[in-house]
Image (tube, rainbow, N blue to C red; front, top):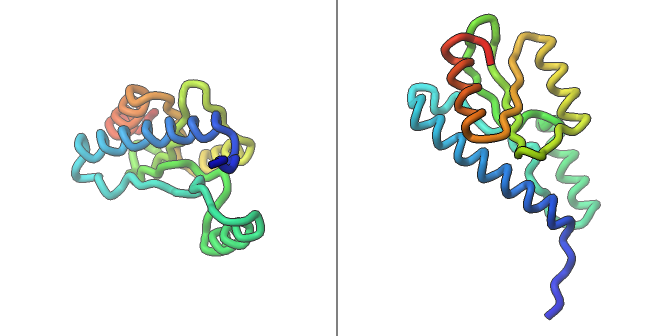
Length: 138
């Protein structure tokens, strides 16, 4: 049986690696900071839509009307610290790159008093979060 081509294998693997990294980081956070466990949450704008191109466009348009924003960070830590109102976190692997829409989102949130971090490993995530919660810096 011939398999249907479903897209770029490298992109799929990258998405899986970022997903595993994000899952490990969220698990660590919820163990380390149980009182804040519900205050770190995912923003699933990068969810893979299924169906035909037209069906995906219809679904994305509905999600956008409901508030989805292309380029929004993967996670939001809704805990004020220091002078910051909260911290947006964009998970990337070592070789991952921020898209133009993600860079524009970063610029917008920094302009209104939020933090924005791009950790590339579980260790970086832990350091960013600990420093942010303890000092308001990241």
